[in-house]
Length: 324
Image 1 (cartoon, one colour):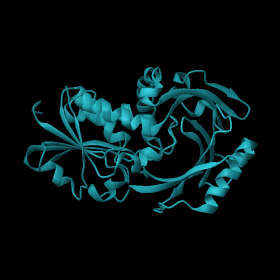
Image 2 (image 1 turned 45 degrees about the vertical axis):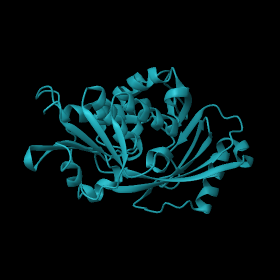
Image 3 (image 1 turned 135 degrees about the vertical axis):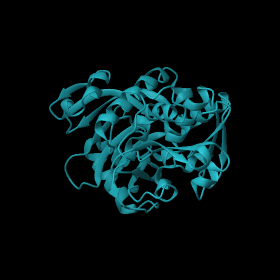
């Protein structure tokens, strides 16, 4: 690749911004095209707990998660700037041997009868997205509000395009394997909960129970509704979320509701991270399909995507399965 060439990253969520930061800090001239305002993107709605969740392939996810963890731990030294904190909590119904190397790398992880206790990054996503935008600007990158109807629009303006469009890749990359997994949550005034809690086992497959203490309130969840495109909060679902969370922490039942939120996780049978040549000698790199774990794997995937944009050698390039 000509090092003076421009790179356009399509997508302004956590995957797109992190990828853009890595590229810009390696000396590439980077523009990010984002359809949504920062507060409206799926990443801004996410609870922000770093844990491999609803994402494949497992072997690569493990590596991406570990490499991302290595970035988040030092970022947690300045949470007011980065939005990253290291917070203790409990993951019910999970054993350490299910997590491979992740279990050995996570600080203070230990098994208990009901599951695991661990200290992991818990990220204030609005603050973290702002931090990534600021870091991108400091590295010389730019962010533009732009609706992209075809990836060819970006290829017409730059030799290299990185497709981090999340759910938008269903149409932009003509990939029907990309589908939404709807997540609804409730934000309440925190009645004193200082540790996170997640339980995914038992009950309906579409239901989870989690409590995530964020600076802006206590995030209660949640749902995992496959193929549901609905973006409006459902009052009955919200009531059920609060009821489930109140079984864990009864004081939640009377906490004042601050907000109802819905996000559509961009799920796929496997993350698509691969390089594709386009006409005229251009390059298209795909980096999408991260499901419910985009923030968990963001830095590992960004580093691999950057390697595919400007490979230093033929060795070390990682390409995940394209999936069905």
